Image (cartoon, rainbow, N blue to C red; front, side, top):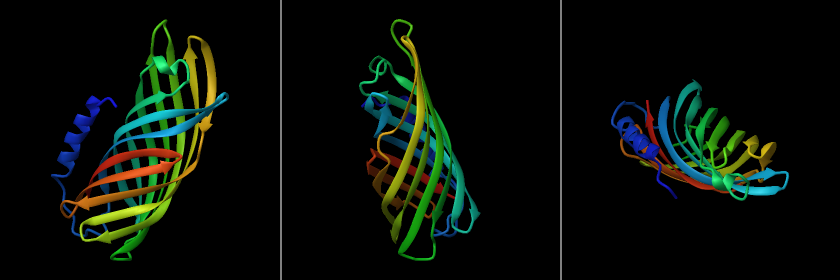
Length: 224
C-alpha cells in the first residue's frame, strides 16, 4: 500500500486538534471534530459482474448537537480508488474527493452501557488520465447506516454492531468511449472499534469492518 502525502498533513492536524479545546462532561461532549484516515475494500457490481474496489479516505468531520444525544455533521476530504479488473482501471491512478452529511445518536443514560446509531449520505468523485489519451471519471453516492452498543470503562470505549451500505454510481471513459453504471455488490456487515481518551475531550480510536466492506480506519477526535 502506497503511503500518501495527505496522511502526514492530516496527522499533524489531528495533533493540533488534540492539543486544544476543553469540555466539562466526558459523557456528554456536544460538538466534536475528528480526523479520519482509512482504507477499505468493497464490491462494485457492473453489468459484467462484481469488481473489487480499493478505497482510501483521508478527511475531516465536524458534528454539532441538534437534539439531546443526537448530532448532525459534515464530512469530507481526499479520496483514492483502484478497481480490480475494470478496464481502463488497471492503467489509471484515481484520486478525488468526497463530501457528505451525517447524523449520529449516542446515548448518555448509562455509565457503562449505551446504544449508538449513525446515518450518512456521501458523494464520491475521482478521475484520472492514462496512456493513449485515456481519461476516466468515477462518481458514486453512498448511503450508510449502522447501529450497536457502546461499552464504557474509564477512558476506554468499545463499540460493535451491524451496518448497511448502498452504493449507486457511474463510470465515464474516453478511450474507448463509454458510460456504465454500477451498484453495491454486497450491502451488510459488522463493525467493531476501540477508542481511548487521552484527556477529558481528546481521543484516539481504531475501527474495523467486515462483510460488504472490509477495512480499517483511525480516528483522532476532539470533543467540545
